[in-house]
Length: 164
Image 1 (cartoon, rainbow, N blue to C red):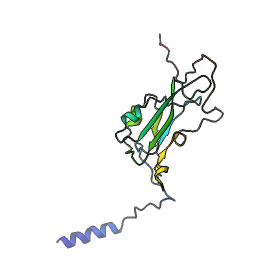
Image 2: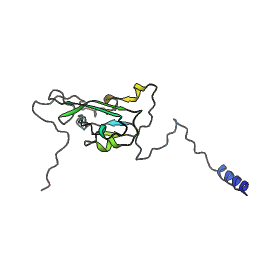
Image 3: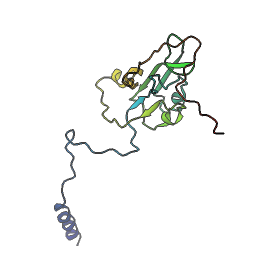
Image 4: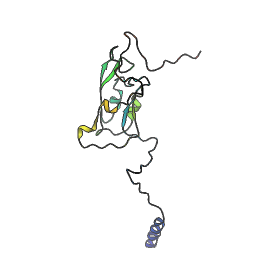
């Protein structure tokens, strides 16, 4: 009896088409909630969203993120706040892609994108630096650092008016 059920299952699946995807020519569509490679975002005016608060590093259960903050000046402004991330590194060999860094960020600077091609031939290649993670500036907008007028605080986040 078990033999007949086994043959029935085999014959049922013979008529179905293959489920193999010919990677890299064909790519399977990713789910919307997929968490892949990290990216550091910018505001529309070219300033970096990261303010160097290191909350992402504190939230990381794998201790994969290292943030070193520095002060912004009028001559060199990287972010709209008082500080910016001078050094931002993620050790991708330690990262477990949990998304806690994304949830902890108050400015939504760190985002887990949909890029899944992460292969390394050397341990040093697995440490993503700020330059590797930072999105390029929008076309026609200067990158960082930017020079601002002395004493003027350029704020990239619009202040919401009281709707009275």
